[in-house]
Image (cartoon, rainbow, N blue to C red):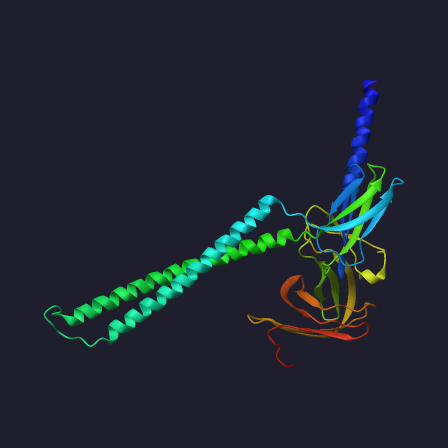
Length: 331
């Protein structure tokens, strides 16, 4: 009986772990990101936090294990009391710093006028002022010293304002977690799979051009991805959302830039000059069979990295030219 209980617990753990492993997935297309999450309802209600803004009309909720879905609502994301207090504290700090800046500007005007007034005075000797030049210098020096103190205080205040603004920006980014999908479902502990397309722009094309002598080159297209939410398994698709369900998925590697395709292409023209100011011009025909989107291309010659240059969008069958920032000399 004890052995049977242990086996049951182990089986439950394996099933639960496998479900949890598949509950948080991102599929990154060239023009958008699909998020999929599995959840289990509690007392007939499931609330799923979407990690970003959802494109209108893309939310889908699939019942699992013969569940029946009732109403589905999209609610604004919740902001914790601690987060709200932190934001209010930062806003108050910023307002105090802005008030200090106004006061310092007023003080600067006063002492600037005082310094100008002292320096423009006509020195007149009298019984009470036997050395008028010394009095003028003393008054001017005092006004300038006060101005220096104002400038120092303003510089420190400006730096503090920058730090507060940076913290406010970082907190604002964290608060923008999208929305919460609230789903009424039966039975009370039903499992659901929620999917939606996020408003993120998807992956950015990045290229590697590896020169192989004077006849051929290897062109590779990679997917550069930025700003993904944490805690998700990520796969990359080499096509756009409109292409439909992906035929091939590329897991996101540690480097963060999966290699989507690689081609061996013929060089039409290669002009390269070595030296401290290395320069090159590379022309090849796009015989890949697909249109290549614009991006950045890293150039390698005999395995040596020699630069990164803009890569213009090139339709299939047309020629593409990559030129270094240092223009090559005419042959």
